[in-house]
View (tube, rainbow, N blue to C red):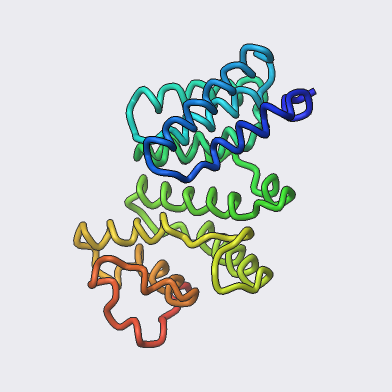
Length: 234
């Protein structure tokens, strides 16, 4: 029996604490309280992957980016996956943590084992799309070769499908804006990659098609945004 079934009151309190959106000090206190609950769950159920996943999740949300926080987070999520290699929530957050640390090759390996349908089947399709988006950025960051067109086309198709099904002007549930791809485009421009470079042109085309071009910080990415987008795909 999972802790979600055996300890419902503690889980409800844990989730409420992680939903706290107050100032930094109150947020820190709430996450610290969530960590204590998760630690108690791990102590009570040391062989339960969900308990370790909750502990890793709490550390992931701990404010700041210290090595202390990252170590605890990685240890807990890794233990969850050791107990249950199919623990997709633990894999998702471990990939996000590793990506945030710019360890792109390691993150790519973690994401390579992710199950896209897991989150789709649980009405959290946005997590599946975020995993695929992170995977594409990792592929771009670790390769000096061709653009990962096949993986990108798959992501674009899934993104458009989710966006159309939800039929909203804002992201809510099935999809979220591709922030990481946008930040990668910003990084490429900052490193003097030209807008017509085949490694960035498909991204700009995609942003234009989904109405995301106005999110750029670098004015060089806004050039000719009023013009019709050019489809960079073969």
